Length: 260
Length: 257
Image 1 (tube, rainbow over the protein chains, first blue to last red):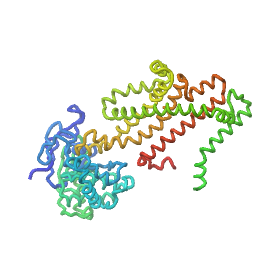
Image 2 (image 1 turned 45 degrees about the horizontal axis):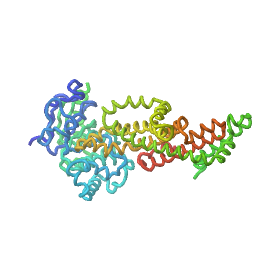
Image 3 (image 1 turned 120 degrees about the vertical axis):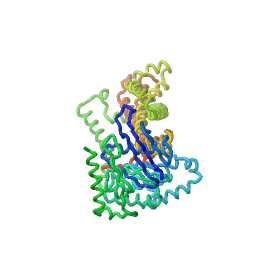
Image 4 (image 1 turned 180 degrees about the vertical axis):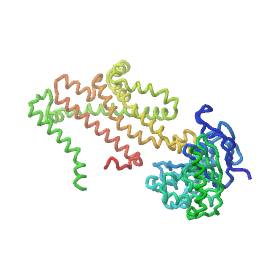
């Protein structure tokens, strides 16, 4: 089976070829439906990886292929969520969810005709992350965790094949974070969507991912790759087992080395 | 309503009345002649005596200000969007605008008179010229502070620059825009009065100039009071408009605490 997302020998620098390299000779391949997590020291080019894989930036060297095609323009089959929920405060939660549909084709031209259907889709999505009947509220009436759930829904509303998450839970408290791990776990299980999660949190990476990639410090490349064999569906209890701790420990050792 | 709330409600009136009493008492106690500083009672008397000319000229000043202000809103909004749209336009226009804004507008009035003659038109232009700058700066700021992550989300979906502007840029710039209107309307008012005092036969500015020539000092002060009342009314109108249009941006309890 060929990879759904494949970066091959990719180097990239901001500010043209003369700039400092953000990633160098980076290769990574993520299979269809796989949940991949990328961990690394801060400033290692994880966000650059996100931008390259979604066609917001193009590499100076190497190739980026998604769904079998070279990426040469922004990737509409990807949904994205970040550490900040970036919801629009003048729109209700439901209207925030509909924003991507107002932009991405073919939904954009069909929005007025199929509005009822889209609203129903958004409401279902909200219900699936535990936000039933919250659509009429404004984002600032929601808690941080609820805002982040909304942000996830916004990333999924146009039914992307690839979900890119850039430290989406970093700003949440520990309990809310674990709740949202389970939300993402279930979304991944139901939708069979390919997920790339960039994170600092090793427990998060090991709990959610099929494979964890460790990046080096700048310029970033992949130092190590670890397959996580815990059977799915995983319960949060698995994070307290010795096997789990061992994997976290092993990954941590890689990062410590990368930071030096 | 508790005691503190009542006092807060009444405090604008209490402070104003307190100032007037202080003023009246000082004038009498220090034997200040009326032609130097008239007491509030004399000003009030002049206000009633000249109610007709004051009202007529206030109306003219208000008209002048509103037309200049409307021009400033249209032009400022357009220029602000343009400056916020493109880095090149921003870089090109910014020094020009700073330089233009630094010119005291009273220095421009003679040129306007040269072009348009004495009267209504130079006053409108002065009001416009003095008040468009804060609108431009605020609109451009609103556009410049779009979160880059949100921009990425939308760009990845295939959003054009115009899409991002329409869906995110313009709505998020509205609180800045309406905030700037409060500043702009007061400036526009200053502009029209300046021009009226220098080069017009109408308006409160001109009325005060004539009162000065005739040494009617209480009338000069009555003119000042008329200006203050108009200024407060216009500011209040803009503040109400701001709250109406961008309630979502005014949730902070900061100012209330």
